[in-house]
Amino acid sequence: MPRGFRSAAVSCGIKNPDVDRLDLGLIFSKFPTVSAGAFTQNAVRAACVEYSVRNLAKAEPRAIVVNSGNANACTGPSGMRDVRLTAREVAKNLGILQREVLVCSTGIIGMEMPMDRILPNMPDLAEKLKRADEDVTRAIMTSDTKPKSVAAKFKVGGKEIRIGAIAKGAGMINPNMATMLCFVTTDAHVSKSEIQSATREAVEDSFNRITIDGDTSTNDSVIVMANHRAENRMITKGGAGSGLFRQALSEVMLRLARKMVSDGERVTKLVTVCVRGARSKSDAEKVARTVAHSSLVKCSWNGNDPNWGRVIHAIGYSGARVREETVDIYFDGLLAAQNGMTAKKTPLKELVKAVSGPEFTVGIDLHLGKGEYSLYTADLSPEYVEFNREEYAAAKQKGLKSG
Image (cartoon, rainbow, N blue to C red):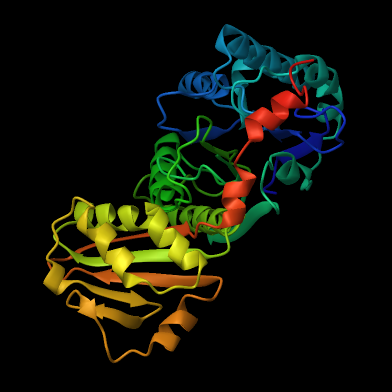
């Protein structure tokens, strides 16, 4: 973890009081920060998102408290009351201002927070803050099968700068953004305008380019905090070190984004959809997203079926300008369709092999212009459907509700 940051996690039994698992985490900077954030574009937003957006607009955060197991979304006035109470308790235990605390949640929508199980654990959470503690990475997991973290180092003016990032996300992944949470800490000395601009750029090139199921969560949040402890000369927009900082931040987020797609709820394949030759970037994006969202296309990928017909039919209703007779489609570089018809020179067995691995690329060339766009997606498996069939009903039937 970068200099000056600490993290910790505890078990509160937020989703199930009978299960002992880490579900409440804390990230804290011992020093003042400059920060930036990106949040869900869903019109229905969790109380914690509304609260954190407001706080970030008027103060620089020093702490992020995050829970898993309960989204605290669609919970009415009590949801906002619980967010404020959580922030107040964190601030009291850390000796900072309440407005310096951001609150994030992930989990089931529509269930009240069990504050009687959360608040008693706040002192212990603050006590456990350490310099290098990966527990918080596990505390934010819901349906994830593995923790997700990335670190990077680079130098500006001879000073080493560190970036550390953690994320969770498995289902409900779709821009804007791609349920997901991501927290980035860095000891870089960077200006407010630069960290905001760099964060927007990095999110656009990473989390806004992943999709699993076409759904956008009520709780998606990306927060970046920098506390200046590297003591490098301040990085400003367009100034020395800006390029290196942006490159490192984008790379960290992109690596996390790919990990999210690979760990989607019971998916089996990470698929990169690359579109080129479109009339515009906007048209290329329309094609890429339509192909990536098609249930028929995703099912064929799960079955190791190089069904280019499903791909071209999705291209056709994407809303982009398309001429059937100029469309070429590739699977991992192998030509499957040329000029809108079967590419007879490529043996079917080679195409099947291309789509049978855990990762492959679908290339689409429209031959109409210079527009390009790429994104990352996954297949659709029977296990994904089974996993998502009755989460809310099951929780209710088990009586797992507020204290």
